[in-house]
Image (cartoon, rainbow, N blue to C red; front, side, top):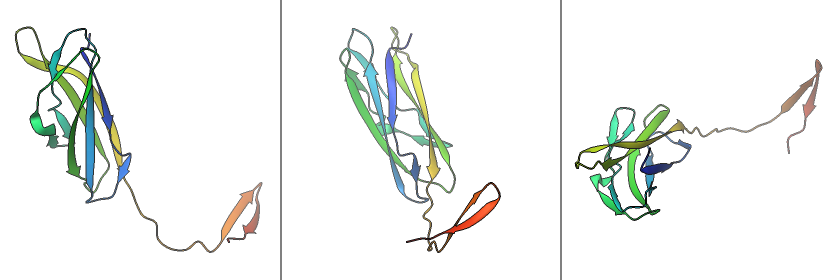
Length: 128
């Protein structure tokens, strides 16, 4: 049974070379105060550290861990885990969430004509 719930706030797309901010929100699902961290984020082979900070969460409390990376020249999947210590103080993965971030492309140019095809018939649609 998970002690935490992790939720990611990320854009769905980003331009190549732009800075992408990722924020991991971890919620304490227990009735006890627990210590948690979000240090196991990955963007393909790049590790996100989220400040490598451990935070105390009261019952039901949610805290955030922000980090960022530079968008590569391909779509990426970011995967982040929440980690909590067990009763012996040994840290382990508790919950995980993944998100796809695609490359955004700016389209340039001007639309001069559109065509509509319906049942084999074609007609021009004026563009205003």
